[in-house]
Amino acid sequence: MKTLKVIKIGGNIIDNEDVLQSFLKELSKIEEPKLLVHGGGRLATKLANQMQVEVKMIDGRRITDAETLDIITMVYAGKINKHIVANLQANNCDAIGFSGADGNTIVSDKRPVKTIDYGFVGDVKQVSTKSLELLLNNNITPVFCAITHDKNGQLLNTNADTIASELAIALSQIFKTELYYCFEKNGVLKDVNDDYSVIESITSENVQQLIDNQIISEGMLPKINNCMHAVKHNVQKVCIGKPEMLFDKNSTYTTISK
Image (cartoon, rainbow, N blue to C red; front, side):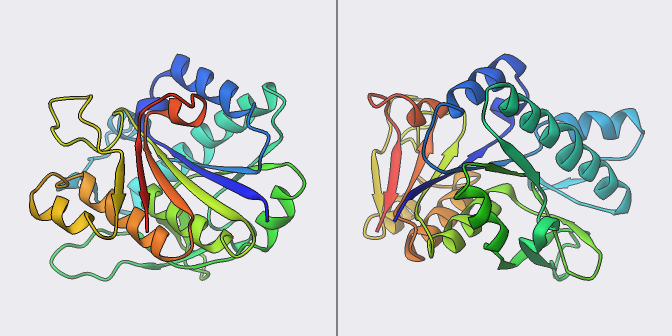
């Protein structure tokens, strides 16, 4: 069984063109099958401000009304996705851009309204691997933006970390999947003010203690929940750290496993 690397990148890479170009150059050198998932960075907010569309956030989460969804679709599935694909091609890495609607790969349900109405936000319901298996086995790299669909014609803004996790789980039936969350820190930190206090290993046995002690909290908590969900559903391992963890064997990062 081949090993597949599912890699998620966020704004710390997307928002810095030099960093993005360097990352894509190194990514192209990975010979094993790979799949890239990207968020939206700051560009959607910048464009919304230019178009005088109000940006509504609650607890760091974007409220996606119809106008905002249009902007997100333009930026995520258009500008950012095609920019990444074009630059992978420039590095001789054949790639195809995806939203969840393409190839019917990711179907989501619109998030139900409880205390907060998030608007056109999707929670992943089903992943189809048929077209992805064909591409990956032919050395073509799928590049996913953070948009899914409900199979009734509606696009939905969807958390990129969750998309990466659900893709890794679905593809674990075909490949030995490894999931990499690339962000600006060296990994999960014991002390948020000390970049070198990396927790190198998190397992199902010690994760609850880290949460209870509030070492894992706030923005890191949903990311860790995605990680634990992945390893409980046949993903071999999940790594969190700087992009260098993919390319430098001596780099320090956090590994999440059973």
